[in-house]
Structures are given as C-alpha cells and as structure tokens.
Length: 484
Image (cartoon, rainbow, N blue to C red; front, side, top):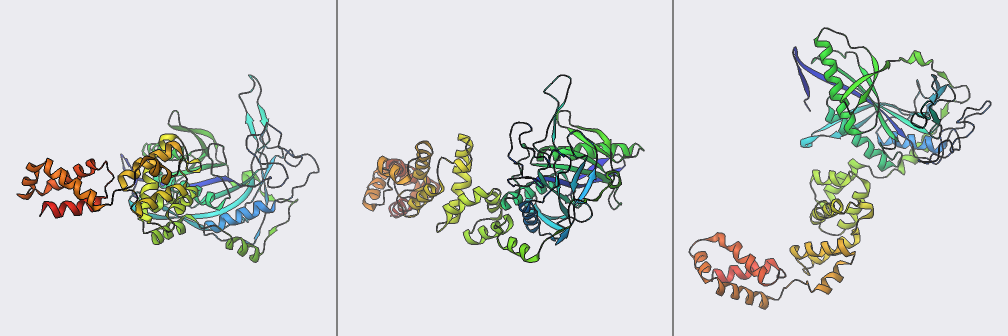
C-alpha cells in the first residue's frame, strides 16, 4: 500500500512499529494465585506477592507460559526453549515492588510473521521481533476523591504478553489491519480476549517519518492507545506533526507521547527512556525458564485451526470467494455458525444467507451470532427446504423473517402458513393461460419481437400463484406457450 504525506519539500513515508500488550487468559496471575477476573471490587484480588510484602517469592504460572508458547506458534515464531526473567526498575504508585518482572535480553518467543490483508485483496508480511511475558501494574484512580488518588492493585501481577512488531508498517490502514489480524489470531488461540475496552489489549505506537530511501529518523512512542481506530488516527496526526517539524528545520525529539482523540493531537508525556534507564538485571528470585521441545510439540499439535488455514479450507471445501471466506473467519463464532449451516449443503447458498439476511437480522435486532434469533441448525433446515423444492427463494425470505420473529422451525412455518411451492405443472399451466388471456395485447407484442416482456409475464404468473410457483417451471411453461 502506497501512503505518503505530501510536504513542502516533497513526499514523506511513515514508518510504524507496534508494541501490543495482550493480557493472557488464565485463572490466576503470572507469579501468584490471585484471581484475574475483570470487574472485581478494588483490591479484592491481591495476594501478598502482588502487594510486594517482604519475603514473598514469585512462583511461575505454568498455564501462562503455555499461553505464551501457543501465541508464538500461532505467529509462526521461534520458541526459545530457554528464557529468563529480568527486573525492570522504575518507581510509580501503582507498582508496589518498585520493579516489574519482565523479559529483556532472553524472551520466550523470537522472530515471527503475520500476514495482513489490505483493500483490494493485497497482502503483506509484517515481521514480529519478539514476544515476552511480564507483569501488569495496578491502576491509579483519580476521580474518587477531590484531593487524593487511590490505587487498585487487582490488575497488579496479571500476566501480559508484549508482542513487538518490526518497523514494517507503512500506513495507518496497515496498522489497523495488523491489529485486527493479531487480535483475531489471539482469540482463535484462546490466549487473549482482545477486549481493548477493558484494557486486555492495548498498543504502544512507535512512529517516525522519512524521505524515500533514507535510513530511519527519530521515532516517538505514543503510549497506551486502546482502540484500533485511535491507533490509526494517532499515526496520522503524529506523522503530520513530525513532517512539519522536519520541514521547518527542527529536530524531532525521541519521547513518549499521549494521544488525545478529543482534540485529535498527540502531546508530550515524558522524554523517552532507554533500556539502561530501567537498570534491567536478572531477577534473583527466578531461575531461567527452561521448557522441553516435546512439550512445545504437544501444544502445537493441540492448536485450533487458525484464520488463514480456515479461510483457505472454506474456499476449497465450500467453493466460496476469498472475500466472503475472509468475512466468515473474522470471528471464530461466525465461522463455526457458517460451517454448521454449510456442511453437506450448497456452500454458496449458505454464505449468501449467513452474510446477507442473517447479518442484516442481527444488526436490526441488536443481537450477536452467539445469541442469534435463528440457530445455525434452523437456517440449515431452511436451506434444505429450498434445495428440495419445498419453497422457493422468495418464499424463503418470508419464512426467514418469521423465524427471526417467532423462533419457530422453518418446516413448521411452511406447514402452518401453507407456503409449499407449487410444482404441479397443471396448476402452473392454468396460471400461465389465465395471464396470457388477460394480457393478449402484450402476448402479441412479445411475439412481434419485444422479448423484454418475458420478465413481465413471469412476474404476473408468480403474482397469480401468490409467489408459490416454482420459478423454473414457470419459465419453462411460459417459453413453450408464448413461443407456441
């Protein structure tokens, strides 16, 4: 994708790398047994380890390690059988220990790749530099008291994966596609719920600009952006700010900034720290983390089918286009719903109903696929009624609307309302004769060369039979009689 900023001195290219903090799905924290459940009363999910009481020692959570390895495998990344935990030292009120246990020089996951899809079907590979595990900090509450700030340590010690990309992203749209794809993979794997509103996935956005062919210039980091839309906006406004500075003869300072979506601007938070500012050193309370290849192989064998593989299989097994397959696999629940509908049936018919009428009904009723008013099994039964000729496509639309409203099965609705398709050729012939007699003038026009009137006759016969006639048989009868 070609994205440039047009400046006074020529075109500028955006260079972006993302550091995504993804909260690991686990029952307890990275180094303690305290609960990770979201929404608890403040400071009710805090162990003595989380609160940094003297003499408390961290104990690694095996499931968190497994989740990190699964994620690495899902990102086609190298799994490091030996990794190490370090202390990242800084002082802040929501960090009881005065340091964060993280991984610096020896992360559990090394280089990998994510393939993103862009508008027009173009794909790009975005490199993954590393994935490391670390503890989350607590949360300061500034709106509980007019003069004091409170701290909630429920989140302190929760396991995070920091997934760092290479600076391969060149446009806001690419950043959005990358985050959507990463979130999709994490959700399929069951390693992070990707809920940015609850803070379980958030991004630090590194932005710089340069002229084509130049080496990288100074970057700025925009901290803790909590929506994909805001990430894309932040890249745009920060890149424009940097271009203006460079073009006016200034220098961009390496610093950490915040994005204000209300004002559509970034502003300085603090000058950017380097690794030495954190005084990293190996955590003396934790041995190096050593895992076995056989254990990694076992985790790999148990991985679910991931989005790219599922998309390719849907195209092959159900004969549906690349775009439609992409829509279906965007959410695992939608893919599962579709597969239940499509299995053993016409895949193209299934995708038309799922992405068309069903999605429209979900939007209209404010429901999600998980609590759809029409189950996958019921929709599949309705497609069977179309395929075996019990109802036609037009009647099916009415049946489906009834299913949405009442929750009844399609065959019960068809039976109750007498909607079975008319396939009796005698009945259809009689309807055709009646319409031809009623519109004798138009019959003459048709026979004198006005072929376009054929559609008119089809419509009139369908109206005469209250939409129940089999359209193929109607077409056949009309052709025979009009040309007779």
